[in-house]
Amino acid sequence: MLYDLIVIGGGPAGISAGIYAARQKLNILLITKTFGGQLTRKAVAIENYPGFKEISGEELIRKFTQHLKKFNLEIKNDLVVQIKKRGQEFSVFTKKKKQFKSKTVIVASGADPRPLEVPGEKKFIGRGISYCSICDGPLFSDETVAVVGGGNAGFEAVIFLANYVKKIYILEYSSKPGADQTNQEKVKKTKKAEIITNAVLKRIKGKNFVNSIIYQDKKTKKLNTLKVKGVFVEIGSQPATSFVKGLVDFNERDEIKVEFETYQTKTPGLFAVGDVNVGQYKQIITASGEGAKAALAAYNYLTHW
Ligand SMILES: Cc1cc2nc3c(=O)[nH]c(=O)nc-3n(C[C@H](O)[C@H](O)[C@H](O)COP(=O)(O)OP(=O)(O)OC[C@H]3O[C@@H](n4cnc5c(N)ncnc54)[C@H](O)[C@@H]3O)c2cc1C
Image (cartoon, rainbow, N blue to C red; front, top):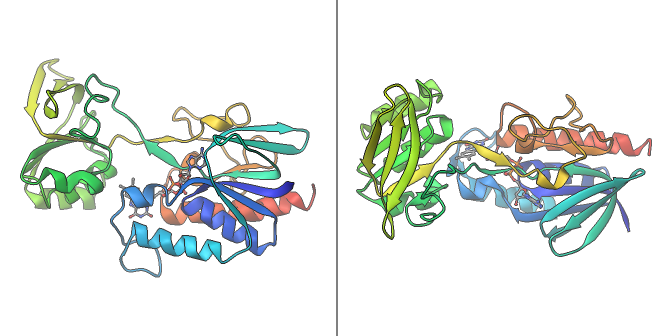
């Protein structure tokens, strides 16, 4: 079977691409590891998706998925491990050892949290190290914790954690936090956060669970210890792009380079949308919008196939 389109990913970008392509009556296969992507993991209350004054990530993705399943398209729960192109045809290989062929492919595989890569991190995952403040914050009631990363994700984590914990250290690598003003004001209001700038995390220590972290002050070079029970990692994300190597160009953050408006990569017929590409503004609505545009661009490409 040769599909018109294979969509990889079941987050906002992939679901939106699926809906738009299905309405063009394309013959589609959507392959995804899970439905929901980052929304199910992190965002609690979404307040910036039109039509919903406030909605949880899980609820929004449930509505997206229900909407998608109304259309006539095939869905497979699997992990894509490689894509190849021979002539005009793509072959998509999955972890379940399946191979699917298609005329076009939309990559919408999103991103995973970026690890700290310091000693102690791997040892204490699930034992004090967390990549999801929303999931794990309530486990640290009345404790002192650290949030690594002073961008918007870090500050949003602090705002949430402040509902539970006693004190929060925010470790920021540069000389000032990058979070926007609104988030900075909200964090200040919690009266629970202490921001430590020029801080390079060096080591996470503990016995069975985390009990302290060591960071270096970039200016003085002095090593300092903080007694914490939890470390929340908020230093950005790693795009899920390994399976597409060789067919696309990447920037320094491993994000896929795409053409403006069509979201086509350097390989004709191969598109990349949402958090996997170089786009600066990574949001539900932008990911959905890109999925829609790429589906229409794929449809257009197919008219010349
Ligand atoms: C803490 C936090 C709060 C946020 N809050 C908001 C908010 O309030 N409002 C807002 O607009 N945005 C928010 N965002 C951003 C938003 O969640 C993302 O921009 C959006 O989810 C990106 O959608 P996506 O479809 O590109 O990727 P993702 O949501 O990451 O989805 C990727 C999908 O691809 C699948 N996948 C990955 N690799 C493979 C593979 N190899 N094979 C098959 N499937 C694969 C995954 O299982 C997943 O379903 C927030 C993000 C975070 C981290």
